[in-house]
Length: 69
Image (cartoon, rainbow, N blue to C red; front, side, top):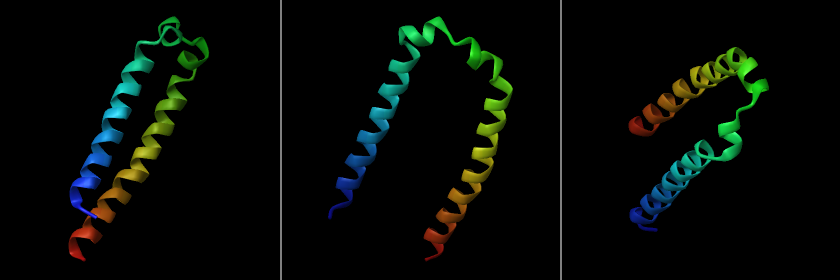
């Protein structure tokens, strides 16, 4: 399979994610707000930080393994 095929798939996923993010940001439900979400902000940020703290090193490790091989 051509490498361009993977580029097209990646671009489609990237564009779809961007459009979905913008649509969610402009939705009426999002504009009204969620008081429960606002009260849980600290735990949400702690969880996200932990996810990123695990995923970023794993991604870098995968990149290094890919480059070395």
